Amino acid sequence: GAVVSQHPSWVICKSGTSVKIECRSLDFQATTMFWYRQFPKQSLMLMATSNEGSKATYEQGVEKDKFLINHASLTLSTLTVTSAHPEDSSFYICSAPDRGLGGANVLTFGAGSRLTVL
Amino acid sequence: AQSVTQPDIHITVSEGASLELRCNYSYGATPYLFWYVQSPGQGLQLLLKYFSGDTLVQGIKGFEAEFKRSQSSFNLRKPSVHWSDAAEYFCAVGYTGTASKLTFGTGTRLQVTL
Image 1 (cartoon, each protein chain N blue to C red):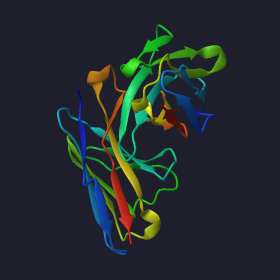
Image 2 (cartoon, rainbow over the protein chains, first blue to last red):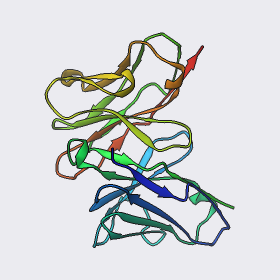
Image 3 (cartoon, chains in turn orange, blue):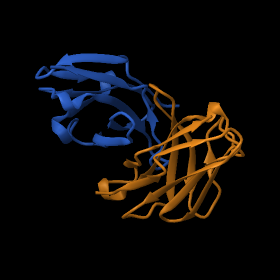
Image 4 (tube, each protein chain N blue to C red):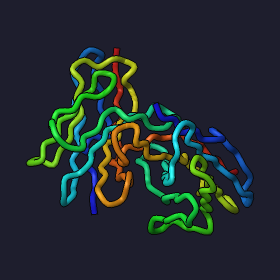
């Protein structure tokens, strides 16, 4: 089946630095990808929709200058957490719709990236 | 706007017992409904989905779910739980017009006792 790969799985950084997380669709093309954020023992909150070749669409309350999203190709979207602070520590999960599963509304998720900001 | 409610935060069942996880949604039209499972520190795996047609849908790992429009529910069931089913379960709703944009419930953590 469809696979979405995220890298890195774990990242620890110092406060004030920037961290990039990659999301790749391995065996299918994705013009759209979704970035979610999950706090411990909580649900997934949609942060933004990444659109290949155009600007990302951010959900209300998400700082676009803090969370930079780039969707440079049909298989790669990146999320950069800029000037990270401890409150940005979270589990970030990307997903992409896989039409092979029966329609545009079925998401395949990456394994997630755990960010810890010291 | 659509919303999803999972009223049970935490459920404990004995191995071999039956399981039902509740999910209620709020949406004006016919929704697309999903159940995902998440193991600790992992991403989400799709268990099953409902788009249209037969309201009882079968999924992987022996799970099934039934769409009941009159109750706005999409409860997940399994007749006999295995210890490996212990995980977090998320119900999600999608809608037409915006491909794949899902709203998730708060999740139900399933603990299985031996």
